[in-house]
Image (cartoon, rainbow, N blue to C red; front, side, top):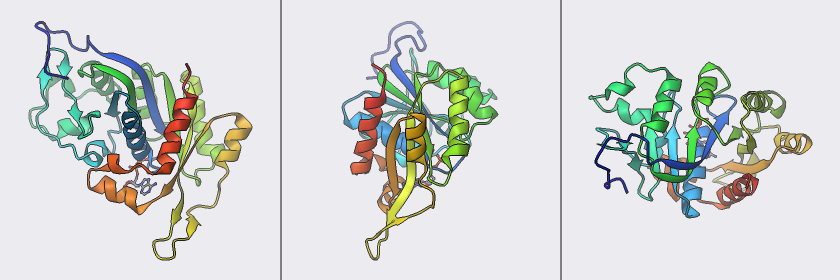
Length: 261
Ligand code: ADP
């Protein structure tokens, strides 16, 4: 509850964030923001207190898929009040500020890493079991700056079957290892789809080497999310949290099992 602000200014002080989990990808468009949103929603459905920090400043879509709008952001003595989704997910995104004409001074021209640091420390997250960080795409400078700006507990890598594990996933894992971020595992997105006409399952990409690669390298394979028109339908209507098929249930179960005690 954000209404019980203290009397003196204590920005960020009551934040008790148990785990910060980054969701990263080797490149854009593989479903990183989608997996971040599905993971956050599924953890919330499991009864955890969850925040979702949208650091994908190149294509911020998180507020939209949860049906949360921009406009002026409230503040209390503990910091900026995050948006709440219908189901109670706390959401913060630079996009929310871009819709606000009266940008607070702290957001003026910061480096992206600095902006994310502020998202982390100047927001009244309160108590969270998980803060899911939707990272900027790729393994370039921006992603690395963000990795360095917050102390991460672990990371999840998102890939499509086409991003051959040997190249892009390996690059992402290399970046995480270099920054000493434990890797929880890999989620494979867009593995297959059901043809709406004949109901047959079709593989969208050739490949399929990721699961095997994970086995060989002893990296957790956290599951696969098929292409599903119902997912984009929910996302486009701001109701991604209503999308909870078996694949998402399996992913969150594997995620929880992979967490260090
Ligand atoms: P990224 O964050 O990696 O750039 P997004 O999560 O924004 O990628 O996904 C790109 C687009 O593909 C979005 O419009 C999203 O709704 C759609 N999409 C991603 N994964 C799926 C899926 N499994 N089924 C259907 N649509 C998907």
